[in-house]
Image (cartoon, rainbow, N blue to C red):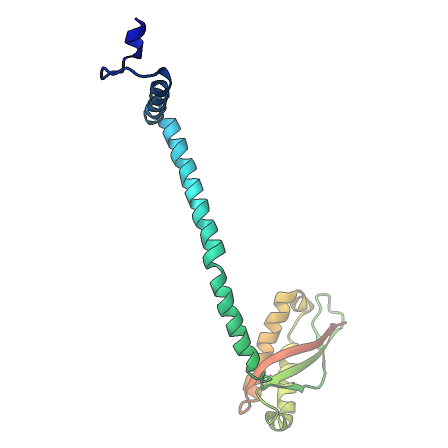
Length: 186
């Protein structure tokens, strides 16, 4: 019987060590292919290892090239002269108006604004139109109520309305923006 154990399936005799190791390897492969859960886990582990290796290779090998391009762009921009924006600010006189309060008591609004113009050359022409612009301010601001002046949304709405009215009043001179310097309600 001992001789039958040493015989291989194809009829040759072997030493006990190599045949058992080969059979164990074949048994493991059969077990791996036969067990679906184990196969899925092995495939997922392989995908993680390959994905991590690919991501690491991209990060360390290819990611440095855009930084070199950015430094070249920054160097080119540093060589270009810095041109200040062509803008001018025109300070309007302060406007004080009485506004409507909910209980009928007197309330006052003091408004101080600056107008943003394209260039300083337009300031001289705009000085002539200041009475017309102040008249537009007065007409609009007197209709406001104390509740209309509360919150940032209300302030933005007031700025938009003032800008719209100023553009009409200062017609030949384009006004870019209205900048609020001071807005006090008493």
